[in-house]
Each structure stands twice: as C-alpha cells, then as structure tokens.
Image (cartoon, rainbow, N blue to C red; front, side, top):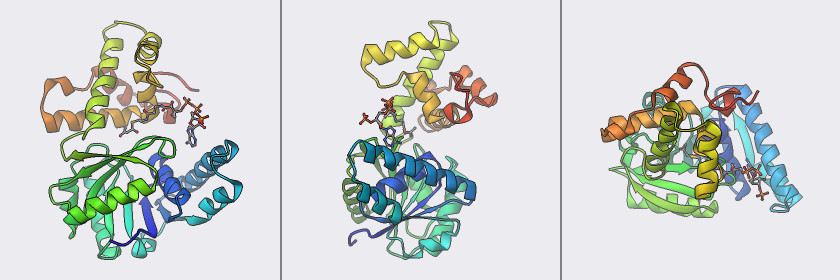
Length: 284
Ligand code: CAA
C-alpha cells in the first residue's frame, strides 16, 4: 500500500480524539467521527488543549500546532470516510457494536482501505469476520493518553495479511511510536499482564491488606510506576478494566482472571473512575 494520506478515526472519546491528534500532528489528514456532536466538541477542546501543552513546552512550534489542528476535521457523517486509506475504530468495547460498525465501514470505505481496531482485548480474528476484507483487518492498540504514550501494540488476526501488517507497522512508526506485535489471544500482551495486576490491587483493598493510598504508594515508589494500580484503574475507567478482566477470563479460562468482587461492585454502583468524578478515589 502506498503511503497513508488520509485517516478516518471512529469514536470521539479519550482514545479516538488522542489517536486523531497524533495522526494530525504527524502530517496526516484526519476525519474524526462520532454520532454525538457533544462528543465531537469535547474532543475538539481536548485536542486543542493537548496541542497547546506541546506548544508551551516547545515540543511543537505555534505554526506546527495550527497546521495539525487544520488537518483534523470533525464529522457525524461516516460517508466522509470514503477516501480514507486507513480507518481506526476506537468505540465502545463491545464485540457486537464493533462488528456492526465494521460492516458499515466495509460498504463505505475504498477496497484498499485497512481497518485498524483499537480494541484492548477483543479478538481481531472474530471482528474481521464482519467484513469482506478480513486480510485487511488488524489490531492497532494505542495507550492512554495517545499523544504521550510511546507504544502501539499491533495484533495480527488469523487472516491478517503480511501487507496489512507491514502497512500498519509503517504507519505506527510514522506516528512516532514503538511497535510490539502480539498474536490474537485475549488481552494481547500489555493488558494480559497489566489487568491482573490492577485486579490484584483491588483484591488487596477488598481483603483489607492495606489502604488504597498505601497500595498505590507501594507500587509507585516500590516499582517506579508513574501511577499506582488503583489510580491507574480510575484513569483507564473501572468499567473498561472490568470488561477486559471478563474477556481474559472467558478467553483464557483460568481462575486467576476472575474479576475482584470489589471492582464489580464499584462498576455496579456507577463508580467508573476519573471520567465519572468517582472511582476508587473521589475527584469531585
Ligand atoms: N497531551 C499532551 N501532553 C500531555 C498529556 C496530553 N493529553 N497528558 C500528559 N501530558 C504531558 C504533560 O504535559 C507532561 O509533560 P512533561 O513531562 O514534558 O512536562 C507529562 O505528560 C506528564 O504530565 P503531568 O505532569 O500532567 O502528569 P503526570 O506526570 O502524572 O503524567 C501521565 C501523566 C503521562 C498520564 C503519567 O501519569 C503516566 O504515564 N501514567 C500511566 C499511564 C498509563 O499507564 N497508560 C496506559 C494505560 S493502559 C491503556 O491505555 C491500554 C488499555 O487498553 C486499557
């Protein structure tokens, strides 16, 4: 595939808007789609704020920042993706909803377009079956916040072609990211290791081993993590953590992946983390 000129990103949340920003900052024209216009205006504000941070630290000049913003267009019309060379979906972690979207995109996108999924744990092989181009479907997993985190985890589905893999790797490197490659097993590499750690931190809290503050301080200062596991869970979203634990448990079958009852209870109570104003910690 020739060099990517235009990207479509589906989903105006933290991940989608961050991915769109990264592409625009690296000279690529981007359409960011969301059905909800409020999500798009929130996305626009957060991209502008993030670009302003890069400019204020002189990591981007004023004019580079302005150019990046110009390259990014917001839309509620998926048909705008008809010329995109690469489409990345970053919508809700539901296999059914993602498959429905891919089916729709399959009809709109040009035949050469590659579909990347930012799924954090759902099978790429199964998502690909919703399209007529399973060899052009691949996992392209970014980390939050995408403009800052240096990694992309590329996931090869059973039918992903070598050409699709090579094009995705080249695009990821063009976006300034380091690439790791995972086969298509639940949770891939990072979440398979990260989520059980977060889940274990919930068990430590649940069984009264220590306070939330001490659990987080222990892991921050004891292992040099930028955030403690409970703070990180709030940052990621407790609902997202729970859904990944469920995918790990269903896919890998081991009891060590059973979600901690306290994590389940917080999600049931609507304590979804920082985005909700309350999770393990209270941000209100
Ligand atoms: N845009 C631009 N710059 C940003 C930014 C954004 N959205 N967010 C943070 N930054 C920059 C800040 O400007 C600052 O830069 P300098 O160091 O050059 O000054 C730097 O990042 C640190 O920011 P802060 O001082 O505000 O806060 P911090 O030191 O706590 O860092 C953090 C914030 C980068 C998020 C850091 O806490 C961190 O790395 N946390 C762990 C994040 C992590 O593990 N993410 C992965 C989650 S798992 C996932 O995403 C996958 C999944 O499937 C669930």
